[in-house]
Image (cartoon, rainbow, N blue to C red; front, side, top):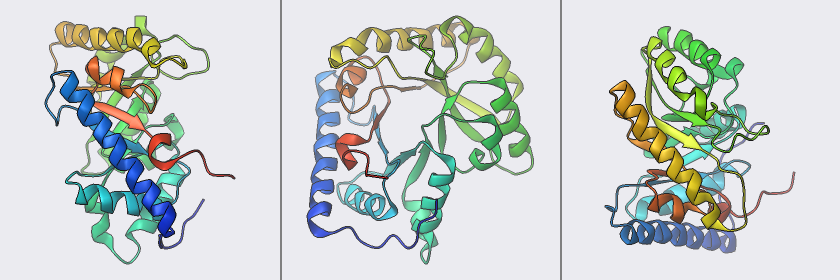
Length: 254
C-alpha cells in the first residue's frame, strides 16, 4: 500500500473528526479525574489503521491545538511506513510533531521494519521476535521500547504470552539489551458490556505488579482499553488506551 501527499479532508468530514477527537480526549480526562488520577497519568493512542494520511494530519493538527502531543497506533507495518513517508513528503519536520506506536500483531519476519521506526511496540510476544529485533538494533544506534502482550483471556485466536508463561518470558527478555520492556498490554475477550473487561484489566495490573516484585524492575505502562471500555481500563490503572473507531469512525470500504 502506498499513499501520496496527505492533502486535505473535506470540511464536513474534518469537523466530525475534530469533534470525535475532542470527545474522546474529554472522556479520558473525566475517567482520570473520576479515578483520582493525575491528568497526565494515561495517554491516548489514536489507532489509525485503514485511515489515510489526510485524516491523521488533520487529527494531529487539532490535537496539538488542544495542547496535547499526537500519538498514532498502526497495526500493519507496510501501511504504517507508507503513511509515515506520505506525511513527511515535502515536510520532514512533521515526523517530529507526532509519535507512532505499533499496536498490531508483530510478526518476527518484519522485525527489520519495526526496529527503530516506532516509539513503542505494544505487542512483543515471542523470543524469536525479540531476537530479530535485537539483531536489527545492534546494526544501528537505536534502542526499542516495547510492551509484552499477554493473552489475558487465553483465546486461541489472539496473540500474546500465556499468563502462566509470563515470568519465564520476562526473564528471558533480559538477554536482549537493546530492548527496553516498559510494561504489559492486553486485549480482553470482546463483550458488549464494558464492565465485562474489568476482571481482565485488574488481572493484568496484578501481573504487572507481580513481575515488578519478582524481577526487581519498573514496568510503568499498562496498555489496555479500547473505544467501548477504556474508562474501565483507566479506573484499573491503564496508562495507554487504544481508541480507533470513536475517533476515525468505522473501517472505510476496501
